Length: 76
Image (cartoon, rainbow, N blue to C red):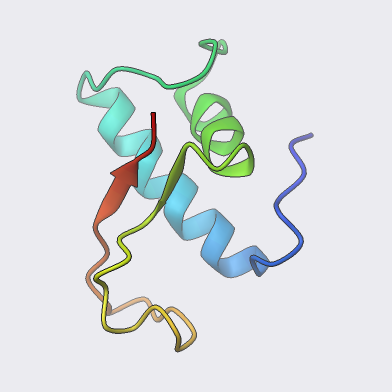
């Protein structure tokens, strides 16, 4: 079980990890040690703050909605 960051709500964590899992499925390079499943790798990346929502996202201060467009940023 991957623990989400305390300052990130469960919905945001799930959405960001899901988007990142899709990127990993398409062939993006993982930023942490690869797990057996892309979803788990994505959750570890988000939990370790290797992946986050784009700081330029205008909805960053507001709760994330399903309809919002989200750009993921990889931190090295």
